Length: 129
Image (cartoon, rainbow, N blue to C red; front, top):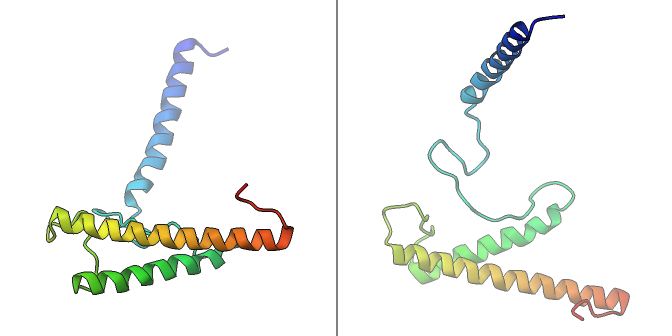
C-alpha cells in the first residue's frame, strides 16, 4: 500500500500535469465566431440562422433590415453606433438602442400575434386565455 505522502505527491503531479496539458491549448486558440475578437464582442440578434429552427431566422434578418432602414432615415448614417464606440455621444448610442428595442418589440409582437391567430385557427382555442 502506498504511503500517504507518495499518494499526495502522485495526486499533485497528476493535477499539475493535466493543468499544463490543457492550459496552453486554450491560450493558443484565436478562432472566434462572427462578431467576436480579442477586444470586442458584438451583441446582436438572438435568433437561429441554422438548424431546425432556422425558419425563425427570417424574422431576425427582417428585423435587422428594418432597423437599418429606419436608422438611416432618422440619422442619415448607414450604421448605428456601437455602445463602446467613442465616436458617438451617449445620447446617440441610447437613441440607437431605443430605436432598435422598439423595432424588436413590434416585430416580436407581430410574430406572436400571427402565431396566436394560427393556433386559434387550427385548434379553435384562444392561446391568450
